[in-house]
Image 1 (cartoon, rainbow, N blue to C red):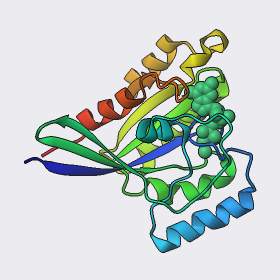
Image 2: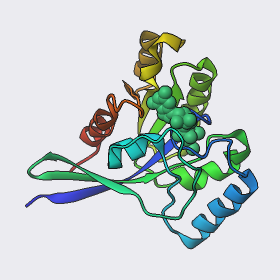
Image 3: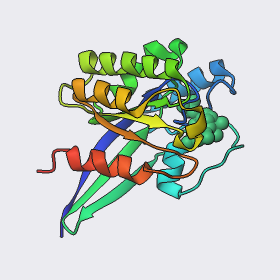
Length: 200
Ligand code: GDP
Ligand code: MG
């Protein structure tokens, strides 16, 4: 019987890259209040997440209503008979206006997925800002994965894989490209992170 290794995982990135479906659709004041309420209750926060929905429920909903809840979201990955990794997954809003709220999300995080949209070069710039911030302010041993999402939109790609991969390598990040829509590489993203976590 192996034991379960549990880690906190945070999602960061510019709005609309595919972390969740709240984006700019919702009323941000309401969302802010909810975010604070969540933090004060010490509850785990889950804003329905495109990528995480694919990972956890194997489902993608293009027209999903924007929801924000104080539900606990967790998923386990079995690496082998003796190794089960459980991720507590926290979503954040990537907008600048939430910048001051970010530290309470990544405090204590063991791993982070910093996501960009391969069809929006500005989203890679924003991802680099999050990487800088995490490397300066988060736990020193945090495992960071850079994730280029929306590979199903290959015809609209503007961020070359080689460019993003080179940046990731220079900065000691894991790197993968995914599609929450087609499910491409979604479980691989989490498995790759699980394999990098300290499991002793
Ligand atoms: P967030 O702001 O980063 O949380 O992004 P959302 O999860 O709200 O997604 C923003 C928009 O991108 C929504 O319309 C999603 O349906 C869409 N989206 C998310 N992931 C993908 C993907 O892999 N491919 C495509 N084509 N659209 C996606
Ligand atoms: Mg979101």
